[in-house]
Image (cartoon, rainbow, N blue to C red; front, side, top):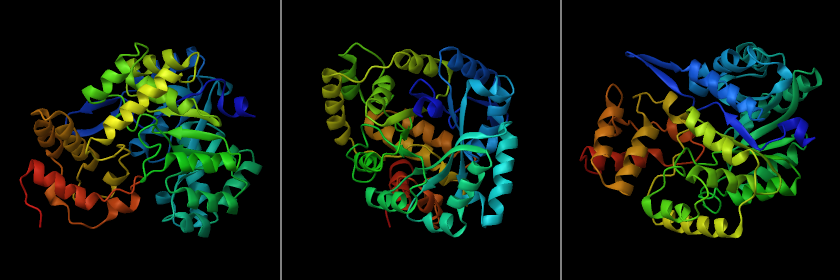
Length: 379
């Protein structure tokens, strides 16, 4: 089943961090010329798995898929995954129209995999009360979906409950990378083990932790450079792909160079060897000494912010300030607050924390950001 479900190779194209074009004050738009080249190259090299969601890039991800992939390549040459996001439906009656709109936006008649998006203890009751699990089964019976599952952002015990109550779910998508493997906030290892216990194939998201494992601090980067075998990103992706039962590793590639690097190291995938595992263990030890915010830049927090604070960008500025201690962080803080809210503009409404997959205490962290970049004293 796995090859028909996922395709022959373990690398998937996550369509959440696509290259964008600046538009003179208007919202950024997807650089479809570059994405077309990326899609073509991806398929040429024998890869075929694509992942999107209705809210990615403010809806542009689905339409970019239609423009760059589904309108240009035969349906049998790719696998396409989409998701049912809880924020886009209020009642059971809303689900089918939303699903139909996603098919139309992507330009396809069916999805290979369709996931309930980002299941947590906070939103599980919403999915259940709207009979979302049953609606996915119905759409599968109609042939509109080939396989059903869910993506997950919570703790192992809660995953056990979900899989116990819904054994019909065929696949689980989890956050999994070497920095989060034993992290108490994410518990990637424990979540993975639950998937294995229930015999569910695993799709990995955030293998490079929103790009943070691609640009490591100098001391950590040196550990991987000594191996002389690949980029920092390639080791992160191969780490995730090396585990039994992990069938697909998604990478949110933002340009053709990132894609070529990933394709080169996943074309003929080999699991990490002993020396590589030891180097990654040393990298983890170094990263644990870095007092940084574990934001993955998913940007779920940004859409609902009443002060239009670009929260992940401001967290990235603080992380860079702590890691590199140079003037660039202050400069980019000004760039990222130009036309948007500053950290000190936070009104502590809590909308951001309600949707954060990493369960970050965003309101308190924004106070830290304001203290560093605006010299606003803590209250």
